Length: 75
Image (cartoon, rainbow, N blue to C red):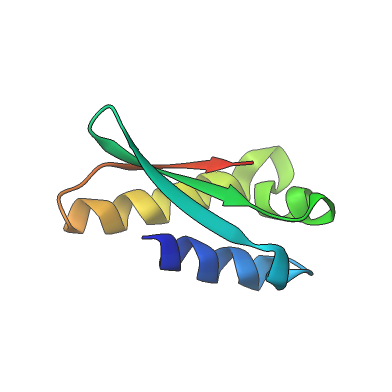
């Protein structure tokens, strides 16, 4: 899942070298933390959070195929 989030995020931002994804287990689910450059934060979130919502939807769909629960935090 980390790789999926990283590939999507890198395609959205102007500074792909600054994209970092880390994961941790919390309450029986995987939490992916997406770190991007401060300049690129708006591009990852999108207008009214549309891009962030779409990113979370794609990750949840992929996680469902693997019978896991995953959430994405944008930091």
